[in-house]
Length: 302
Image (cartoon, rainbow, N blue to C red; front, side, top):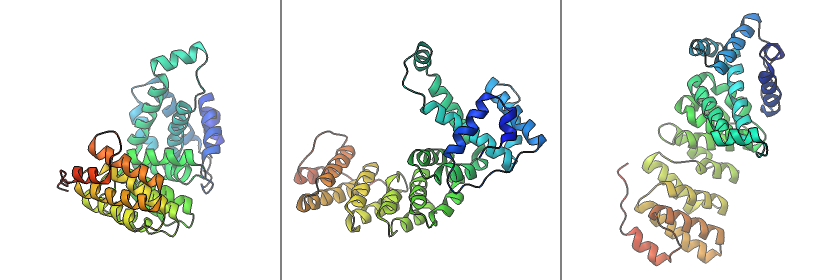
């Protein structure tokens, strides 16, 4: 996926990046065309400046970001650093213990994440192609996290994935859109995915919702009350923990009573956990006790 011309001149770290990201790229990702001589020189200079903290790095990053081919290379380099930071084996040698004690891996991850955010829209096509479209869950989770960090500029590219024939890609799109933010034109997309024939797509359209005010809360309550699948209802109940107020509490109490009637023990647990989160308290309560709590709540002004 990363081209040989670039990796041959950029040092051992870039060779590792090529091997790792070739394995991690999505099955549907298009192969990159070879970089020409000028592009190779640019990515080599950008990586060396980044690794050494050189003063000219921001200008080199801006130059590389302006070319889709070199922007893809740079994005994959930073993704490689993120994988390397998270996938380091359990520490068992003095050097690794020192890195753990000094937070070296955390610093590597934070710096690479900040660089991807700085690339912004230039990084989005690669994140969608290599990570969000991947067949394995861990790269997809990376894609969700990184696209959420970029925010609204990532929405147009993720929107295309939401229309995919592959339910795994629709699931990933729903999670990414919810993590980016359910406000504005994202909520209609999430609502469409929440009506998907595949129950897992419906659940993942709800899973990451954390904002969007009353309209987003209404979608969660609707799915909690009406969805035919208990897993989707449970996912909606878990997401409602992020929407304090009387409406969420009442919907969760109704759901709790339904779960008791239906013998849905996992649903009961989810309802109790979300109600406890809303109350900022620990320990289950009876539905009557929770209704007394709900009577003290008001909805935020959305």
